[in-house]
Amino acid sequence: MVYAFDFDLEKGEISNKRTLVDFHGTNGEPDGMVVDTDGNLWIAVYGMDRVMVFDPSGKKIKELVFSGQRMTCPTWGGENNDILFVTSAKGGDGIEGQADEGGNMFSYKVVDGPKGKPEHEFAG
Image 1 (tube, helix red, strand yellow):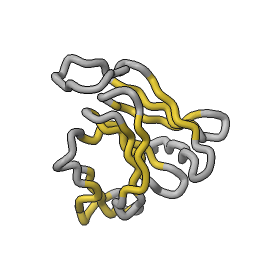
Image 2: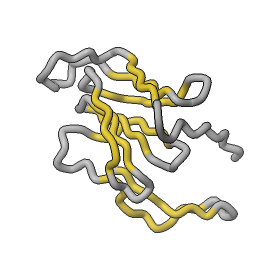
Image 3: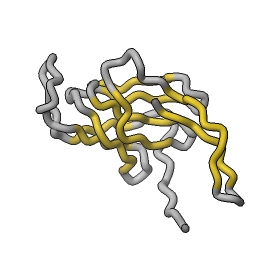
């Protein structure tokens, strides 16, 4: 499950917990995630060979398929923040199936569409 909350910037408090993305019924679970300039959430799915992209309402809008079964942590890079780099884990957890190139880093170049959103430093 991936949850969303309302955030009160002045008080620094969260409220209104709700499910944004439900991974029940899939073969994977959410791992690392990043946000793009349109507010879309890019989630690496551990146990599957993909990164799933969801709009701010939680609707899936894209899937990127890689050759690793255990996708872990995405991050934005490149001169224009237009390359998604994704790490993956190597086997040992009982996931069987197609050829697996886990343990490698993968990349995806965004040609047309939103780019990576710069990270913010936590001030508190």
